[in-house]
Length: 389
Ligand SMILES: Cc1cc2nc3c(=O)[nH]c(=O)nc-3n(C[C@H](O)[C@H](O)[C@H](O)COP(=O)(O)O)c2cc1C
Ligand code: SF4
Image (tube, rainbow, N blue to C red; front, side):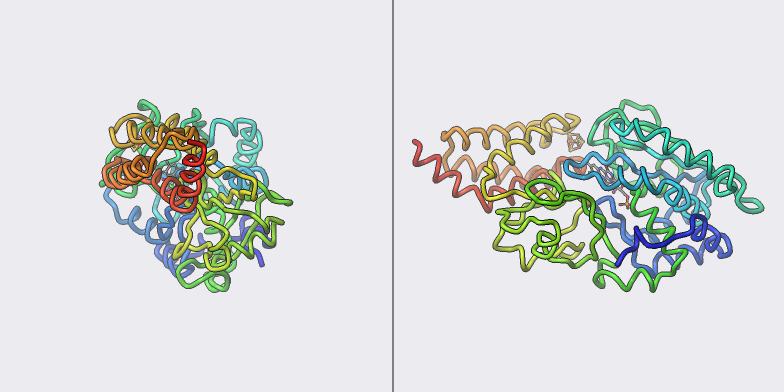
């Protein structure tokens, strides 16, 4: 069972796509049910169609290779081993939407991958998989390095950063990037894994892809597994796998909890391992699974996540800038034995405000870890604090 690691002749997907009309390419991707692998799960074919139909003199394809979510490292592996297929996915997207230029926005800490990525670009130009691809259709790609801000993985902040505007600041939506993205032109932003999967779908067909996964989450997902497991690493699983099955595969049975979706994802306690599945209709993830063994203090885990969000909030809007600090202080109060039930209830109320009133996905998703870790482990921590008092 493999989509990403299936046998593949580089160039096969692009050749097939170029034999089709852009509309047929979009239809194939829509039929496959492919949804974005960067976390939000937006249908890829629909995104390409919107960009194709939007008004604009130019169009752009951006590969989001920022991979800043704590616990995620699957794109790093893909870039190291499969940049030629990624470039093909970008060229297919370009043919579908009518773009001539593409960018790979590479996480600053992955600078060491630049020779690999630039080497693959040079090779693709020589082999005719970039440059002039068909009469009247040219497409080329360049790489831009991020500068270390987590929020720049968010597509609007990424575009601002790419334009050289003050980095790491979110731009209001709508309009969405497919209408007004890079230099206000229709722009497709897709994750590394999404674009590689698009190339494979073009080569093997939408039915081949749909044989894996569930009805609403077709295909497979790459998962970066870290934490208290015997075999950490990158795994390809079909959507619909239970947390229990995943833990069995990676040598993590006996864990007390699993954080799915990175720091901004949700915490699943052991009682739910057999019933919760990794899929957009249940527990979605951009690719991070962090496993916590029985000895872990979940309040320490939450404190660590909250410190991360305090550091990474761009500070533009009050609910996120101030809210993160209050949530962090609450966790620290619990850990030092000073907190009461009332402190926790106030913090949970603040989570609702943050979800509703934060400007971008960073502030809106902070309540995910806070509510789920507090919901499952908060009472136990408060009781311990009470005993100490
Ligand atoms: C704070 C934040 C950070 C994000 N970081 C990433 C990232 O590192 N890589 C990524 O592909 N998507 C990231 N996203 C999601 C992107 O905004 C966007 O949805 C995605 O790149 C679209 O590609 P896809 O449709 O192929 O998933 C992030 C979103 C938020 C709110
Ligand atoms: S939610 Fe946070 S990261 Fe996003 S714009 Fe507001 S302050 Fe900045």
